[in-house]
Structure formats: structure tokens, C-alpha cells
Image (cartoon, rainbow, N blue to C red; front, side):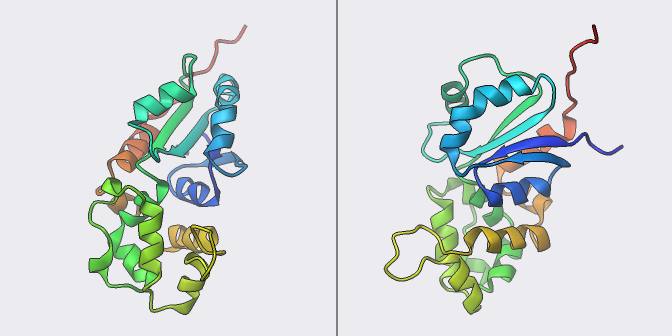
Amino acid sequence: MSPIPINLAVENALSEAVLRQMYAVGTVYSRGGYGYLKKTIRGWNAAARGTPFLLVTDLDSAACPSALIEEWLSVPKHDNLLFRIAVHEVEAWLLADSKGLATYLAVKPGLVPKRPEALPDPKRSLVELASVSKRKQIREDIVPRRGSTAQQGPGYNNCLSEFVQSTWDVQLAADNAKSLRRTLDRLSTFRPVWAPAR
């Protein structure tokens, strides 16, 4: 039986691409960044009474996932709102498929960090990896241009979304990223809770 589509609330297009590899997706809400998600989470929680929602954000510098959830959502969480947190960023989930990422970026496999969730800044590590790619297009897409104050290149999300769609092995990555494994496990057992008909 096909899973019931779940609506997404995500930080960016890359997070959307990652989640589309895991579950049937309905409507996607993304305005860019965690600030939008934090501001609107109570609305998603209320909307979850009528339709399932999956909200995914990065842990970033928060102490732990439970502390971030408590900070963002001060009211009881509805069972139909799945609030998942990538440790420390969704990029760690990409790095967790070290073989696939090394092949896609055209870098030596040994350069990919072995414990991606232990990295304080997985995005920076991924950008540094791309900077030594043998493929010029990868470097131009992912690495910020010389003199730029940006943290990523102009084609960052598009390039890595292509990796996710074409190469990324989510099951292999989950073996190397606990927060990804927990997210997959939660999605595999998720059954919406519907209010009884009046």
C-alpha cells in the first residue's frame, strides 16, 4: 500500500530533494531558512489536525534536538506533525553516503569525513570537498566565487539536489547518520491520526 502523502515544511530546496527520496510528498512549504519554520511551526502544528506534516530543520548550534523542539514549540505537538532534526545539518546526511558523494563530486573517497554528524559545520566540509573536485562544473556550482562573502556557490542547491536524485543511497547514508536513521524509522511507522467523524 502506498504511503499517504505528507506535506513538507523545509528550509530549502536541498532539504526538499532529500525528503522526496524518503516518502510520498504532497505540498511543499519553503520560504528559505530556519527562521521561517520557527515562525510558522505553531501553524503547521494546528494544520496537522487535518493533514500530516513533516517539518525538517538543521540542529545547527542548538544543544540537542529535544532542546530545539522545546524552544520552537511551546504547545503540545500533534501526532500528525513529524518534527525531525538533521544533526548538525542536512548536508551531514549527504556526506553519510561517502562512496556516492565521492563519485559524484569526483574526489578521492578517503577525503569524505567518516563521521559526518560529528562535524560542527557539514556544509563547510562539503564545500571544501567540492573545491578539490576534478570537475570544473562542480567547483563552479558549489564553491563560492573568489572574493564572495557567500557560504556556497550559485548552483549549490541545484547541484546537490541532482546528486540526491541520481546517486544518493539513503539506506547506506542512514547507516552512517543516526538522525537520518531515526527519521527513516519514524516515517516507516507513521500512521496519521484522524479526528472521529461527528
